[in-house]
Length: 104
Image (cartoon, rainbow, N blue to C red):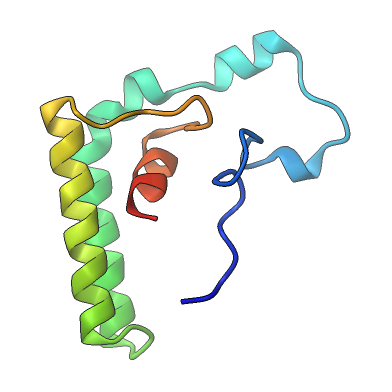
């Protein structure tokens, strides 16, 4: 797949960073950080992402090999998070963006 990286992966710029000319107040940034709380949702996030991959395969948008590779990558990241081995990054705004980064 030769699509560009999703926003936020190649830099520390937040996912919403392209929408604003200036950064929000540091208090607003701190308030919006939810990773320390929503990391508990990692298993559900992985399962919903696997379901999405399967739906894309069923729709013919992903081949069987692509779907299998994505599902394995998602499950591997989920296992790393559960075992405490996943390296979270400062640019990870939430558990979903962390999982996405781990897969890509």
